[in-house]
Image (tube, rainbow, N blue to C red; front, side, top):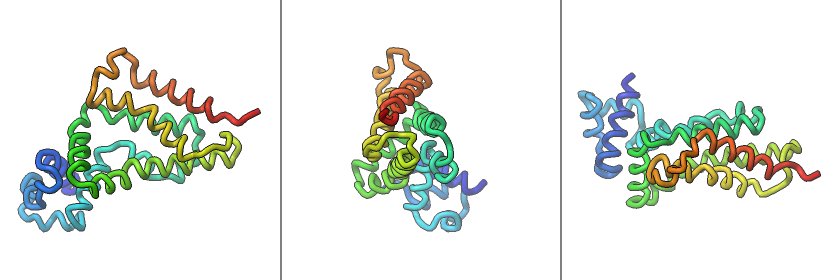
Length: 194
């Protein structure tokens, strides 16, 4: 329970003040802790706390936390689960998006850490998964680095429209409709050659 309270207080503090402006002391105060030292019982340092805040608020990261079980699933299922997790990053996550973008601009090392811990992990999993599917003959041979980026890239207009620019999704295309078309297009493009 305390860990969750600390994470929520840290999210609020980081969002309001940025990484540099938020302090362990202010996070402890926000979490209602009597001593900031309690935070170090759960997190070794401020950077580890920040990383976990990002992971906690980005649903897609949780999806790839158990890559072995995902590797056994058929592509239709894996792509749907990943797509739904990406699209769960909606308007309620505006605060996280602003936090990440703001910190990435101010501190390139935060952008690098975020990419490594979030999108980088997702792309690594997807590359490995697609490579496995190629090796099993399910997909034609291709550069999985590009196909992994392509799949995520096809989701981005919907995510960005939901979070920052509603005009991008003003045509009424739902997340579910978009995801279904993305998966169908992606899978047809990777079918083995006859």
